[in-house]
Length: 237
Image (cartoon, rainbow, N blue to C red):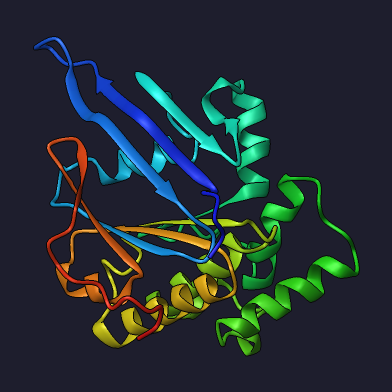
């Protein structure tokens, strides 16, 4: 594991407007993520897990604090700069997949390459096929999302998140809608990605997953706390 964090959150705060004067969701989050880690952040419904993901990915604006990616202050970039940075450096995986229904699985995986102007007529289809093969879906490459199961769609979403080879993977409740067997497959993929040197951060409400990560944290009262549950201490154990 690298000695330097790829991601740092320093006193990150987020308040949403409300009729009562504002709802403070994040209240000074401090966090460091290193390459080769699979970090799992547990939080109950409404704890601010999706807000945390959106702060890390630069999707939403901060109320206070700073998010640093390899020393770059993400939220000092303008909106278009953040979008370009995100497309090349962060793979985001949501519970709802967000695959494009009219595109084949292959084209769904290649879509981020096109958006980031990294598409190459020969190399991009080959990489997309390799990514689909890595999640055991190469034989379905030319099908549309409606022709495969929900668990398979989530695996396509993971392949798509890896399209531009980002060093940071952020997953928001990716196993929430999946059966236990399919969820296990997704966790094994995340473990493998961490072993390959990527930084993987997953937020969840499911405490049964906590012993699968290299490090476990808890999001409560708008802050990150050490998790009382003991992690496995070894990716994929």
